[in-house]
Image (cartoon, rainbow, N blue to C red; front, side, top):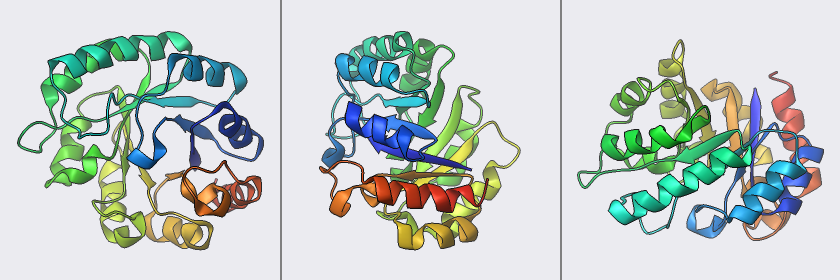
Length: 230
C-alpha cells in the first residue's frame, strides 16, 4: 500500500518524507491541477529526499491537448526530468476527439527512458475509461493511472474505482486513486475500493488549503491509516 503526496516546494518534499509519505508527486500550479515545475525545483527536491519523486510533465493547464510546440517543450522537459534522478514522470494527453493521443504518448515515451510513467487525470475526461485502461496497459513503461473515477472527487466514484482496480489486477499498471481524499474518508475508501495506492493533496495540507504547506499531523495520521493495509 502506497501513500503518494503532492509537493510544490522543497519544504513540502522534506515534510512528506519526514512524516510518512511513500512517494512524492512534484508539481507547480497546484490550483490549476499541476504543471511542470522548474528545473531548479526538480533538482533540489530530488537531492533533498530519498523517497521516489514523480514529476509532472504538463506545459500548461489550458487543456490536455498539445500542439507541436507543446510537444517539443515536453520532450525537452522529459529529458531534464530523466537526467535529474527523478523516479518517474506524470503525464497525460488527449486528441481532438477526447481520446488518448497515442501519437503524442508514444513520442514522449521515447524520452522517458527507464522512468516509471503515471498517466494522470486526463484519464478522467475519457468517455471509455475501461477501454483506455486496456490501451495503456499495452505500454510497459506506464505503471499507474491517477484517477478520481471520472468525478471531481474520488469519494463519489468508489464503485468505478473499485472496478478499475479489479480490472488492473494481473497487468503491469496499478490504479492510483486521488482527488478529494481526506482523513475522515481514507480508511473507508481503501476498504471499499481495494486500491493499493492513494494520492493526497489538500487533504494533508494546513487548513485543507491547496496553497498552504503540508500539515505534519495530518500526514502522519494519513500514513497511519495507509500503514494498516501494508
